[in-house]
Length: 534
Image 1 (cartoon, rainbow, N blue to C red):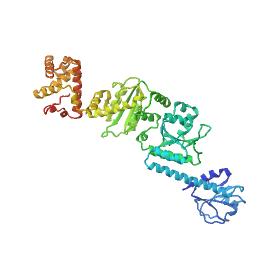
Image 2 (cartoon, rainbow, N blue to C red):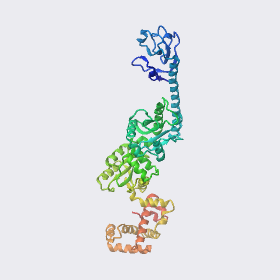
Image 3 (cartoon, rainbow, N blue to C red):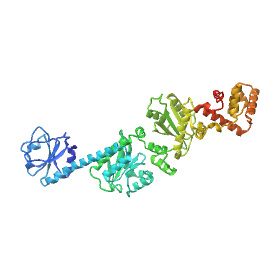
């Protein structure tokens, strides 16, 4: 263990020492010793304590000597001018033993700090998480500790915290600091000081009811959270500031394991969005207060968009993609979450693919081979989690249905999502209009294409002229086909419920064909060769 000489000078400041020290001195001290009378051998990493009367007549000139000396008699001028001597001179009325014990207390405190720092490092390597680290640190400090994120929401805290401080009572009751707390001018000013500080800040009793040490937590010189320790159980010692400084570094190392922390820009809103995406139960009143605290303003129409690069094509870092998206979608809020970019789109009007801004975004994702999922429109931030899942689901279904597109809107995949849920309960063909299989069998046996005619007819709102033009047949031919189809299936196409069942049936067959295999219809061998879904 090494302690800089300046640390001992700080301890001796109350004695009003007279200093004769080299201007460039940056000596490290490893031990404190009493000088033996007429001693002639010295160690340059030792701080010697003596009286003038015990000094040797001649000091060696081959090493730097660090000396605290009590002036019980006049010190020879040559010693003051000796460049190899770092002299700290004290008045004669000071007790030698008292000085030695004071200096030794510095060594003991540093030894304790080194031991405590090693204990903190052990807590990091134990892989037990940030809460374990904070509990270990709280025991070392003898006082409670709390860690909060940039949105002033609790990340974790030490066990058995029960302070009477009103701010902490609110923090532990709500799980976050309220807007009223942060808007207090003295607190707001203090937060700015802590945010910019390179070391922990002590807040005395005259500012808040309970004194505390507060520090920012930094990763790559970027603030990612705050730590506060309250002077509840015992007074802080001189080395507690240093211990908190070490603790923040240890916590930063633990937090760095999170991919979110790695990709955060250090914006307070990012943590808030994470809380929404994680599915925490947050009521509207709490959300409104958090929005006020974070100075966030959302318009009526909200969407969640998820962007996932196609691994085989994209070499652009997520942060660069995120920057481009933010540039195109002004006022929206984005984060990098679970190896994807999640954007809460905030707009006055509903999204339209023909919108100039949105068309540029589509062009960008298509060019860079990025899958995009878009949720339905919603109006309450309590619904962020479910709409995030919608966006993810639209990408999953879009890819599984073998689409050549990059952009997938959940609005276009709701029916397929329903079918996916139903497929887990049984064979989807059981939900089809049963007579459709008679038509499939007829087509396979007679080499006709009535399935295509029926599908086109339904798709065009049962408009015979439009359907005939698409199929490139005359209206009378189409009319004959429609009549024949009704006979084969024993149905009435003028019945709206029957038409609905048929549309649903075609959608089910399309889903089965694209996601599993048309063979799973199990109609007969020939039918499996007839890809009847358009």
